Length: 257
Image (cartoon, rainbow, N blue to C red; front, side, top):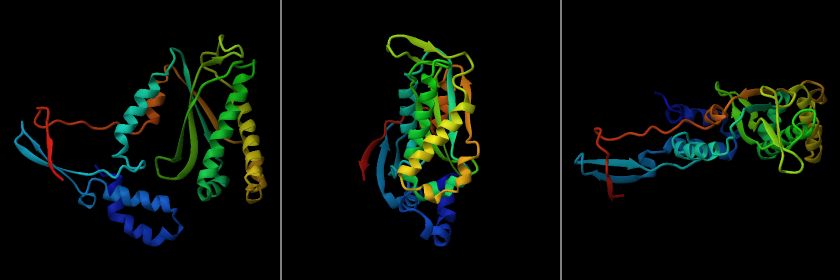
């Protein structure tokens, strides 16, 4: 199986030579870490496994949060932690995307735009949930930012996992949503767009945006997830692959660095 690290090691140098002057420093650093992860470049430790009577050399990990190998364990912890908050009811996967005309600006101002994307989308979702015509209560939500599609195209979007209901103003009464309907996405889209435009004004970026972007529909999607487990699993990175040595638990101990 070809890994991202393999692709970076084979083509990374040529890619950086061509586009490196346009890449953020954080991207260059991530590429270097992923290329060197679990290789001799980072050193390692020598282990001896008594049941196997063999030596094993283990290279150090880069620990970069963008590295698929290093994030497996953290992803499993994240998944276990958040699944504890699932309620015994339908959940919704609500997705907010950023229109294509704004993506170049977002890539040049990633920290600011991603924060604004989170803030405006969550405020819009909360505003409609508080409306008594829909839920009439304050909802909880877990949001995960994705910046690329599966075919590696830059496409910032946020997935929210939202329970089908919320707490009323008295904070003691549960207000359930309908079984397969949380809030209307057609109403959610213009609220999200208006909040985003106002944030662009405050950030001093409004003049860099084509005014036509405020007249087109902004894509918001909502899908019912009956228990929420599948939504959390899909948003977490791949789980780690655990292995043993010759079907006997390997009790390796470090003997040298």
